[in-house]
Image 1 (tube, rainbow, N blue to C red):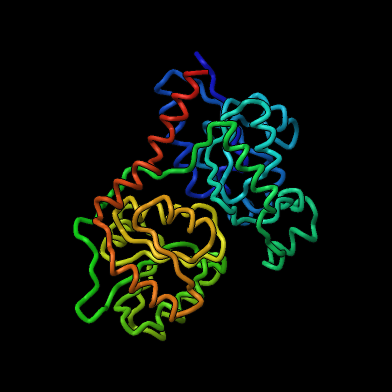
Image 2 (tube, rainbow, N blue to C red):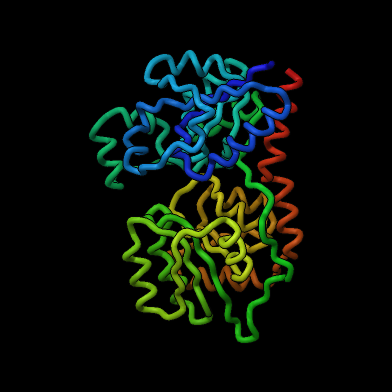
Length: 349
């Protein structure tokens, strides 16, 4: 039996929703006769975060129990596929993977990569930086033009697969159109954190034509969300829900809003597009890149109610058909197709 070794650059328990991609890859590879050896990245680096998050490992039965505090580099060299979370792309790991002829999966790099300082992973080794990062006081920077060029070169020399989402459980059937008086409804889901920009939702509520804002999630800034709900009767707050309930709620709103301050490729955006929903996101580089690649994505500045209103008017003037939105996102970001592409590439080697 052929053996497929997958090196994941960050622990699955830290990656949250990205386990779905790995799980789907595991099933498809197993059905194609592969024996899977799934190896986590340097757990000694991210153990602090996983301990705080407190998540149990969902794929413990797939993993080699040997920790990577020793010999992780050798295990990376022995892998067929190197998986990198888009939010924590370490150029050093990608360089090693590409130089060894590996397949790099799960990587989304827009024209201008909107992420942290390239030395982030190196910096995490140092207590003061880690403490400052945890408090949200560490400065975050874009990659330099030279580093962006290097990433582009890396993409050109290897097979790069991006994270995808599975088939939608609910799909919008009618084209979005705001009310005769211009009223509309909005949907937000995610952890209530500064990174997700939950405090910016107040600027959306400043628009008199917003009829309802439905919010799903939980997190350390829950008091901010609770205050919004207490002050404004248009806000509906729910905890976490199953995937089908979330997608149904998306399709019942006119637009899915993503006010994140910085983020890799948003899985919420992909989920929304698969359901045929419109996405209005903060104008950060990764979302501008997605806007150029997918139908139904619009950007704005959530720090400015005036800009939000202006961009909404532009969006309402040319709303695409939901079937076109869903089909376009499926062609580009379906996790099953991504896994199939990876397996086809493996079979050619």
